[in-house]
Amino acid sequence: MKKLIIASKNKGKIKEFKQLFSKYGVEVISLFDFEKEPPDVEETGTTFYENARLKAEQIAEIVNMPVIADDSGLQIDALDGRPGVYSARYAGEPTDDIRNYEKVLNEMSHVPNEDRTARFICVLALAIPGEETLYKEGVCEGIITTEPKGMNGFGYDPIFIPNGFTKTMAQLEDNEKNSISHRYHALEQLESWLMKHQNKGE
Image 1 (cartoon, one colour):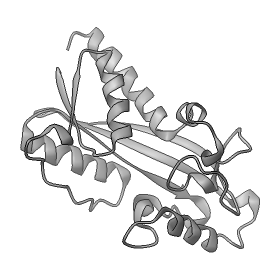
Image 2: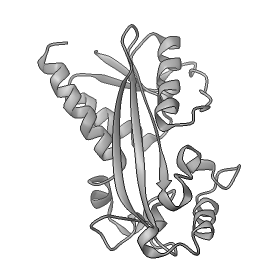
Image 3: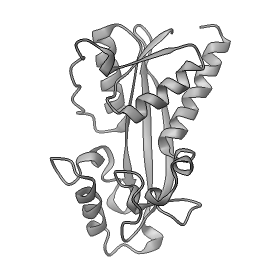
């Protein structure tokens, strides 16, 4: 594997993947690098795994190259796993971070502190033409606050306190957040696979 496409238009994600794969001599190409961008893939799956697979496999089929895609979101135990795969659009379209987390806080207004457990999940899918799709998962466990705090971050970061911390994700410095995030743990799993893959000379 010498070249890899990342099925994302998120510049932060693209940078992370480029840094990781460059250590293994793999060139990462983003959707921005195409003269004619591959079509958007509709996320019709009911799990993070299905959505990541859909994006990776459909684009890999179009371009006939290895493609990596991710799907991520927040699972809250007291809400039976919601917002889950609908995290980005939980309060409807157009997507709005504040409306999303305000809806969560409203739905959890009577939930006691000991029952406010939740987790961020990130699933990576690596689709290589002619091979079985590879999956790696990262999780960050924590609790949901009763009010938003912090300005650093996005999504549900202002209402999520990771285990072992007293601050929300949105109150943490970037280096702290990046060292415990669900995406970091998924990338860690992927890096372990890359090291073995490289050692085998594949």
